[in-house]
Length: 254
Image 1 (cartoon, rainbow, N blue to C red):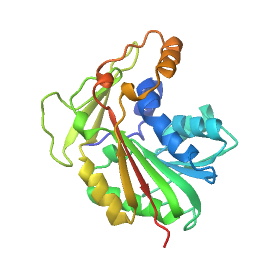
Image 2 (cartoon, helix red, strand yellow):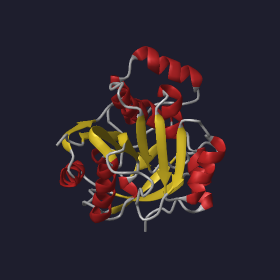
Image 3 (spheres, helix red, strand yellow):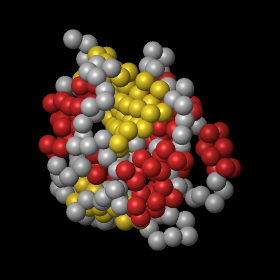
């Protein structure tokens, strides 16, 4: 049974989660990918949730963001709390991006979407739809929990049981630590890195690259600034183990 982000109680608790680790070792690398190409003026945020990532990208870059999700509750939170003139929020159904034309978007990202997708066929369907709307030569970046770090306790979450070896597609639990509240327990799925590469290739993407950053990859001055803003936060195993995997790929120019 996967987590339903269409439930209001789940959506609200997810909104309360402190994503300092995702910001530090995930989103910054996703944003850098788009910032490295000044020609990118529009980005699709597939599975935008409460809009945190879309809002940060729009504020940081001025890029126009198409932020989509299948959860009405998530879109409601996003539109109420994270309105921005450069963001267009859309509620979608059955993974269809019907409001976007073929070859119309300059880049795309999917953050923590595929770990919540139960079947490979469904992941492939989403990737093909993203491929359809991207312009040739555009970047697609996936950010998900690292399947090789399953069971490791990080400062804000733990995905999977320590010492357990998960099979491809096997259900697992993820515990998100929320200050002064009980953990939010999510039910997601274990997808090895090889599955991402396989499905991206089948969808048509090329030049697949995988990043697995740890805190050692973050400049000391930047870490110091983060710590000053949140002095109560204490890093854990993210010094030695990468909590996330970032998959970068390109829609080829035919």
